[in-house]
Image (cartoon, rainbow, N blue to C red; front, side):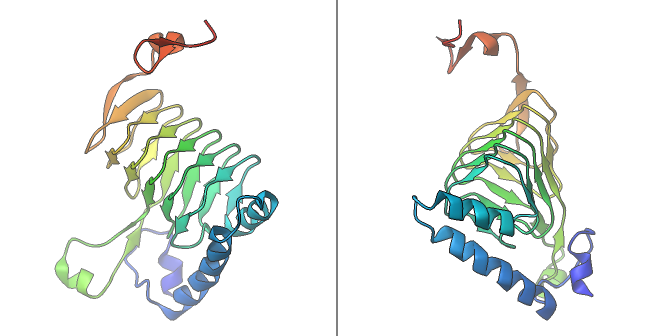
Amino acid sequence: MEKNKLHTGELYLPGDSEIVEEQEKCLEKLYDYNMTRPSEGEKRQQLLREMFAEIGENCYVEPPLHANWGGKHLHFGKSVYANFNLTAVDDTHIYVGDYTMFGPNVILATAGHPILPELRELVYQYNMPIHIGRNCWLGAGVIVLPGVSIGDNSVIGAGSVVTKDIPANVVAVGNPCRVLREINEQDKQSYLSQIRLPLQ
């Protein structure tokens, strides 16, 4: 069965009728979520609980949310924030730790296609999970590719394309995304260059 290959990294055919039927049901709920009004906070929370594989308390996902499986394979910890246009290509599992923040237009893509043209012509696909740690911040327009892990507390600069694992406690930027520096003592004193934190 093609559906059994969603989470194994094997090549499979996403147009399989069983897959399409289940996926469509998930997308119907996603449509309902994206049509909610700003005043319908409780309705949004209820829909997220129905849509996601797991979702912790105090999560906020700004519509529109785009997700291949409507969030069925999304695992959010508590107090996760996602700005406009989070795109979760959740053909397999995406794990996001507590307090992580996504800027607008972030893409989390678990799905890939073979390099070999003959296989792409047959519409084969494979999926690899994404793991994002606790208290991370992914800036606007970040793209995370299949199979990538990002460690706790790390910051990914706006517009970065994350092709390989990023360790914990670093600032990483670029295409491809590379570690710029570790989070350090200076970050306890100021933000945005030399603007001092109000706690000082």
